[in-house]
Image (cartoon, rainbow, N blue to C red; front, side, top):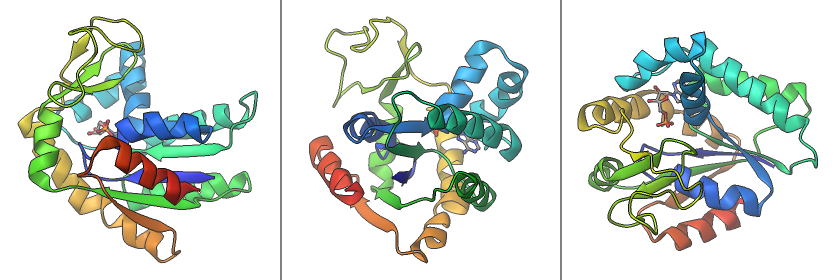
Length: 218
Ligand code: AMP
C-alpha cells in the first residue's frame, strides 16, 4: 500500500501521519522533514534548500526528488520489510507526481490511495501559528489543543528545543497556502481520474480523523 496525504498546511497531515503510519506498518516519507534534516546536517543541498523554505517558496524539484528517491531506496531495503509508504508533502506539483509514478513503477508498485484532507482557511491559519515543533525529532504540538505533557519538553525525545518553525509565520504561511492552491490542490484531479481519492474533513477531533483515514486505507 502506497498512499499520499494531500492537504494544505495545518490540516493535520503530520499529526495523522505519525499516528496512522505505524499502525499500518507504513514508512512515512515526509519531504519537509527530509529537507529540514538536510539543513541540520549542514549539507550543500540543505544550504540551497534553506532560503527557499524560509520564505515559504518551493524548493527546486531536483533537490526534493533526489531526497525522496533516496528515502524510498532505504524503505525498500528495510528489515523487517514494511507494508508500504505514506507520503506527506510530496508530491507537491505535477512534475513531482509524474516522477513519483515513475519511481514506483520501477519497483513494480503504484499509488493506491490519496487522502484529500481539508479544513477552512481560518482554522489552518490558527493551527499553524499556534504550532510548536520539536527541533530534535520533529514531533508536532499545538500550544492550545495538543500541548506537550510537560511544558517546554518534547513527549517523544525529551528535548527542550520546542519552537515555532521559521516558516510558520503569517507571511510565509500566506505564500505556502497560495502555492498549495496553485500547484498542489490541482494534483487531486490527476489522481481522481484513477478513482483513488478519498475526501476527509480535517476540521474534526484528531481521533475521528484518524479513524476515517484508517478506514480509507484499509
Ligand atoms: P512542509 O513541512 O511540508 O510544510 O514543508 C516545508 C517547506 O519545505 C515548504 O514550504 C517548501 O519550502 C519545502 N518543501 C517540502 N516539501 C517540498 C516539495 N515536495 N517540493 C518543494 N518544496 C518542498
